[in-house]
Amino acid sequence: MSDHAHDGAVPPPDGVQAGPGQERFARRILAERAALLAARRDGAAAQPSPGRRMLVLDVGGRECCIDLDAVLRVTDPTWSDMPRRADCPASVRGVYGYQGDLYTVFDLAMLLEEGAQPDPGVMILLRSVSSVPLARIALLAGNARGVMDIPATAPSVLPSGFPTAVLPGGRHVVVLDPVRLFSVRYSGV
View (cartoon, rainbow, N blue to C red):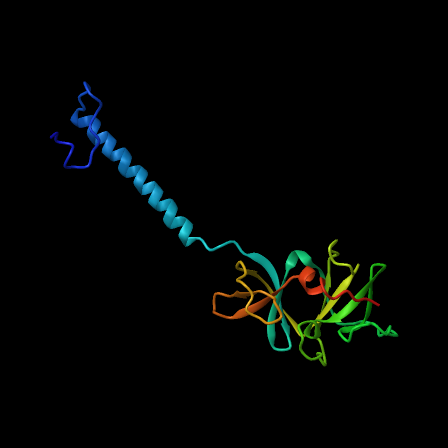
C-alpha cells in the first residue's frame, strides 16, 4: 500500500511521481477552497432573509403592515360622507378627492372583521392595482407607526387568512395585501 492510502490524499496517476512541493501545494489549495466554501456557507446563514419595506399601522390595537410600494400617500383622515347605495358595505366610510381622482374610503378595522374605528388618525391612499376591481382605494387606520423592513411572511395563522410576520422583537404583525383584501369584496360608491 502506498504512503497516500492512510492520509486521505489522492495518489498521482501511474508513472507520475508527486514531489513534496506538489503535495504541499495541493493540500494548501484544497484547504483554501474548503475555507472559502465554509465562509460562503456561514455568510449565507448569517445574512437575514431579504425583507420588504412596509408601512406599519395600528388598527384597533393590532399592528398591521402594507407594502410601501402599494402606498401612494399617507394623509390626515379627511373624507366626505356621501349618500350610500343599498349594496354599499358598512366598511365604506365615504369618498376622498385627490388630484382629480375619487377614492373610496374604507375602514380598515371593519375589513379585518373588527368593529368600526371611532376616530381614525391616518388615511392611506393606495396605488391602483389592475387586479383589484376598484379604481381608487383609501384605508383608514388608527395610526401610522413608521416604515420598516419586514422579513418574508409566514403561513397564515389568522382566521381571516392574512399572513403574519414576526419582527425581531418577537412581535407579530398582520401583512396586508390590497389584492387579497379586496379580491372577494367588490364594493364601491
